[in-house]
Length: 62
Image 1: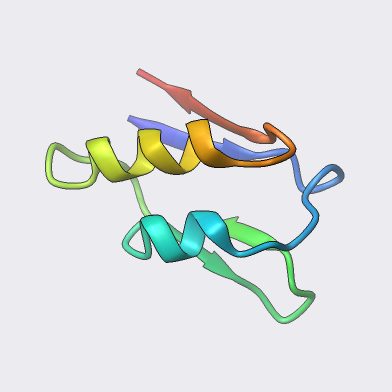
Image 2: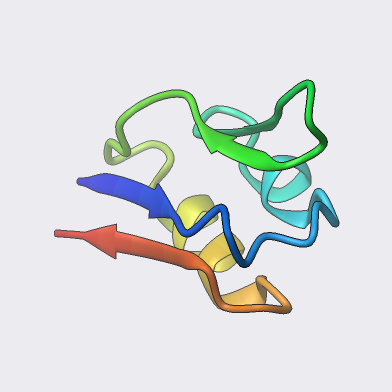
């Protein structure tokens, strides 16, 4: 699975990186970025991060 972030809408709250640091991190600009593919060990946390994003900018392709 692959996660993507619409960085133009990201507000930099950091919730995704807190919930799933294996897949998301905050970059030098203070915006979220994807750092790895989603596997079976990170799938649940990545989906929780997507569903919890306050501006709904995270997508996951299955």
